Image 1 (spheres, rainbow, N blue to C red):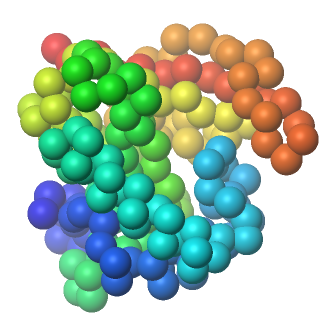
Image 2 (cartoon, one colour):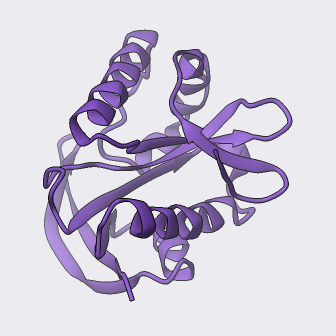
Length: 176
């Protein structure tokens, strides 16, 4: 478990998180800001995701996916992860995160990103964490900027979502 503050902590994904995934990930606002979360988000999607988290843990030999949990109940209200696209021996990885809409605008994700990145730099041997974000997702850009990430550039027509090409912006955090 990784403490965020008095109200929230991070811990690995569990089977019992699936109902929370279906509850929160069906929100159009969450969907609009993410690339890989399907809509509608079903229990079959949650089953697939929990299995993927276990496979990633096995392949990398360490935890890659964490849920943001309420300290009081343990309910998962969001998540943060490394995608592992470059393999277990890479010096860099890509950050992904999502938070249930009722918790937006409270600074929870900014604090989570800071704590998670510090954890990753200490425990995963990385020196670079990348955060590619939809150019239209200003709130997510503010999260990583407040967490110390630096904007590196615009990626034109980087993403295809719902039949539309979207520009992206690349942010990165470099280990001191």
